[in-house]
Length: 172
Length: 216
Image 1: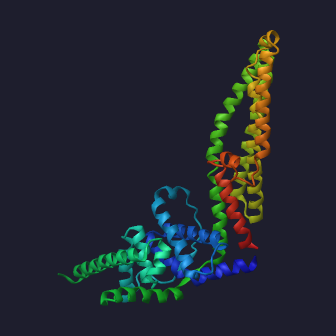
Image 2: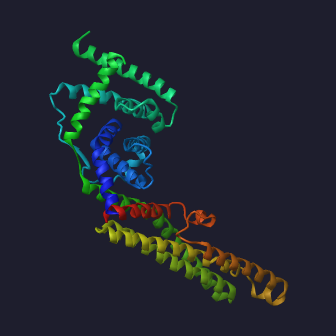
Image 3: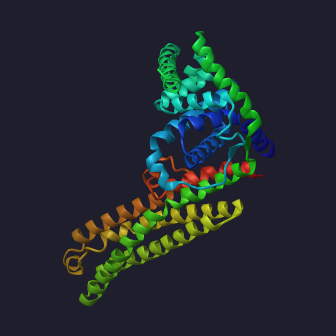
């Protein structure tokens, strides 16, 4: 039992980036993010016994985290009444006003992703994290062809948003 | 891959690489949040139980009033029938007050072992309340009997009422024996162990079962 616990916490620690990126794409405010992190970790723990080691750990985490996030996003209004406040579970030391250019571009990209529909968010997150179409299809539960078509559409949308944003910044 | 695609992926990757350095997971909180989930899950039980108490108290008073009226008019079966149901309902309502006390204790508990013990007590007590409710079934056939009619027609009237009483007694016995809180998925279990009164207890018990491994 000790080993089980230690393994679970170690897995969470090694894959905390996945949870952080997903949560930031689905929630805008800090309270919602912490609530969603809670939900994801509880769901991961409850499913831990049933983890099939034929699949990669990251695939398992993506699947549960994204399904939880999509449900959370859809139920968010009703859910607010039963929020349990706990201390931050995942924290970052990176400041919001970091002058690093890459960070600014990332924040823009994340902002555009936040505007997407819940399933589109999941698709683009998995694509940007470098997962193959077949793997994305398994996680989302649609065909690989469908994955390809949808991702192309989402990428066009994101590129358009970036272009529009650059025009606004640097003048027409 | 187009240049713009590569750009999007590179923006994502550059930040991704930084995340490992700047993210920290609060490992102790992983345990605490699961415990908090149990309290908030159980807390949703308060409302349906309070509703049951608000309905149950005037209903029980009515039962005793009917028994008293039966006593005044000499209607022995009314006294036995409504009186017995009234006593069963009184015990059930006392049980509901006990459930409310347990729910408050769970939210105040600090140690997971304490939470587990109280959730288990709540589960058993809720189960006993359901069983108690079943015991009253046969008495409903007695309330409406008339002593006069029985004296005039002991075989037909008496026989018919006895048959109904015995049928309801058997039903009550069968349900009492069939209900097992460990098997909420049986046919009978699905009818009784569902809804606002039972689902939070089942969910909290599941979370605690998993938490037992996490905390050891």
